[in-house]
Image 1 (cartoon, rainbow, N blue to C red):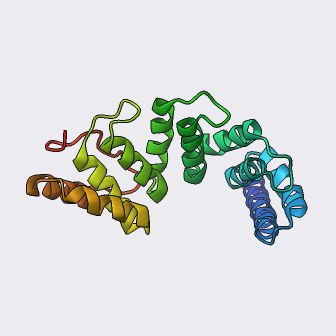
Image 2: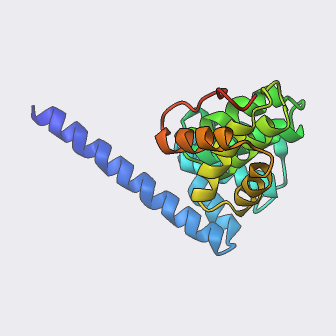
Amino acid sequence: MKKIILAFILILGGQRAALAGFAEGATAYNSKNYQQAYKEVVPLAQAGNADAEHLLGLMYYMGRGVPQDYKLALGWHRKAAQRGKADAQYVVGAMYYTGNAVIQDYKQAVVWFRKAAEQGHAEAQQVLGLMYRYHIGGMPQDVVIAYMLWNLAAANGSANAAEQRAAVVRKMTSEQIEEGQALSARWKPGTPLPKQSRTGG
């Protein structure tokens, strides 16, 4: 029993150290001290810390403290995305959407945008709404799902989503608006988003 408790304490201690190191790295990054940020973040990213992987991916993407390298950026973001980091899932989706460092693939973009959107990521919800509205990436054209996604994203502070929702609502029937409102009200972060609506196709 003592060995189990000791192991648990060591694990907690390691997690606290990792969090402290990441906080220092993030602070350095926000202060534009990119060399210090890199020094703090690399060991954590190599150890599998999703926050550190995402930050290192951003550094490579933006060329901050390191030479700009989209392939390395994608690699680090993909690692963080596979660990469930919503911001990284959004970036991976965006890179597939634009064809940045990868062959443009809207279907892969949808996969990653959906993963982030299902965690409540406002930008991912907003872009996924566009893909439904304009039938991009094999998505069915569905104004109700687009409206629902923009409703959720707007509630999370996305001004773009609020504008798109206001534009699309003028072209929707009262039945479609009602369904979009109901879908928005029922959905909870961490649960699957509907793939199509009853009235919006």
